[in-house]
Each structure stands twice: as C-alpha cells, then as structure tokens.
Length: 91
Image 1 (cartoon, rainbow, N blue to C red):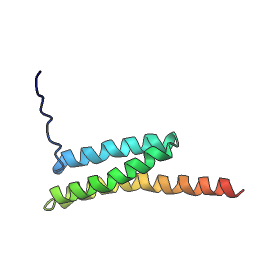
Image 2: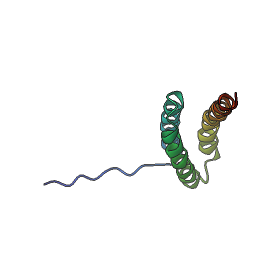
Image 3: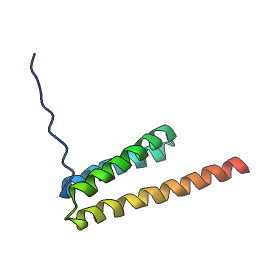
Image 4: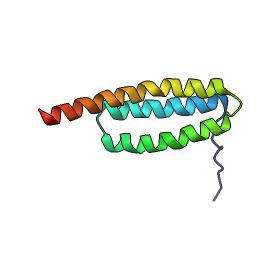
C-alpha cells in the first residue's frame, strides 16, 4: 500500500483567482440546470473560498479585486433568476 500526498491548494495570486473561477463555473452550471441544492452548497463554499483568497492576498489587492469582480456577475445572475422564480410562483 502506498501513501499519496495531495498538493495543498494555493490561494494567493493567480492560483486564488483560478480557484474562484472554478467555483464560478460550477455555480453557473448549477444555475443553468436550476439545481438549487448545488447552488446553496456552492454559495456556502464561496464564502469560505473568498475568506481564504482575501487572507492569502492581504498585500495583493489586485488579485482580490479580480476574483471578486468576476464573481459578482454570477451573483447578479442568481438574483435575477431568483426574482423570476418568485414571480412565476405568484402568477
């Protein structure tokens, strides 16, 4: 039996931005398929990921801004989709 070590995830610089992009892609996919349980799980994961990216980039506001700027579009889409869903329930 052999033991494999997994490389630690790096949250600083471009690596952190890429982690946010991966989550963003998964969130977009869940939104398209209207998989609300997955959206909820990814949203919870997002909060933790953003905390880690901010902590790892305390002196790199550019990386933080890039990661958050791209992510805000996903949340804007989520809000619009939720408003449509609620509107369809009331009519």
